[in-house]
Length: 204
Image (cartoon, rainbow, N blue to C red; front, side):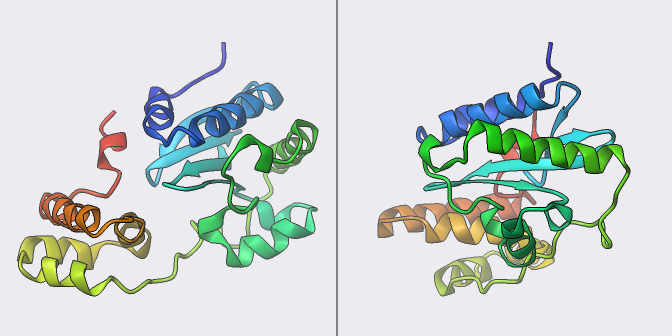
């Protein structure tokens, strides 16, 4: 029986309908290629560890999914060398909107096996810390709302760039003004309580 984390089940269930089969397929493929993989949630999205070290991760957003390898910079595929430096938020396979956007199972399995080998050999990145996420400017309407709630503003200002980005992207993805305003109000409420954007996933 594969070692599964129930929090990832919840994460997939709450993902957009288009994303669910993608996440399920990736998860199944990882377990098939690496039976001893360990699931966990880090930074509010699914990670897969092997031999006590991070190996790969996946995440879903409103309109796309991403998948990436922790040690992509050390892997052979030239695409990883570039995306590892510049596309932190997009993963190492670019935007994934359906199963058709994924490489073949054979190719994915080969990459997973390569990532496994790096962990088995104890190879480490030069700077084995989460890749830095560039600070992005908060939209004016969000800042205006935060300034009306000192507690929420204080929490937001203390958040690392990655946590701020989760809120900003969620708000920017709103297609209607009504939805945007509702999300800003919700963001202020959650921030005043000291919560991250995906706090619901972290409760389990």
